[in-house]
Length: 251
Image 1 (cartoon, rainbow, N blue to C red):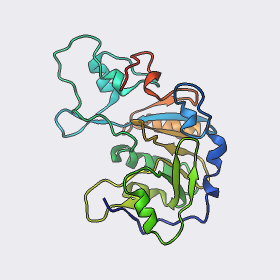
Image 2: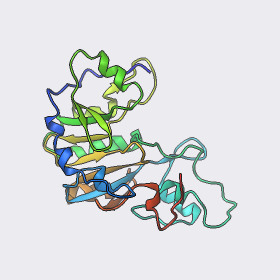
Image 3: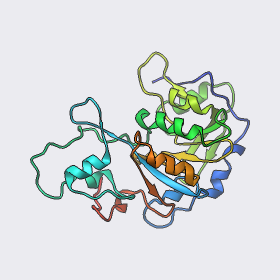
Image 4: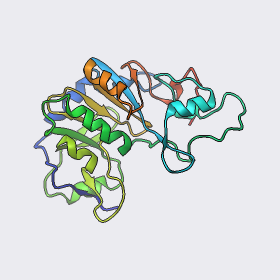
């Protein structure tokens, strides 16, 4: 994989646009990973948007709620994929998803495209969005080294990220692109508009994406039938031990 920076991306002079993350993320204390340690704890409302899995025929996707209905498990804001995959009792019905579960640490295009469209109307700065890419993604470090300009790097409590600037409607097209290959472009781990009216976070160990924003923004997101989401709170947990209703089940 040979990644290159897309032409519509600009490189900021410093990490100043991302410094707010340093004081707006909750500290991780004790076991577990809270929502507020992944996405800034400054918004009115939050949503957890689930990444769909491939269906068992390989021709479409299946939602978490469909898997929970098959397994007899409960749908709730802290449910975990590994828990809802385990049927409560024996069943002859085939499982509705393929062997591959939802994407881990990468927001799929089935979610990303409607999400960017929806969020565009909840910001005054759609042409100026900040994106953070985890430094550990395959090919990222090499791509950064090939750029003549210095790309700002911000170290958050658990991970380091590279900061770039890109229009909102270009995020789904790709910021780092492997030209000449059909791979889906890498999606940023954190991204937000210049006016900070909302923020999106896809933790690399999670099979879902968090969105924080105004009540109107999150209400619209939760009502959008293209997406599967549930309201969540900064104090909710996202680690695999968080699903005390259906599990917990180790990954």
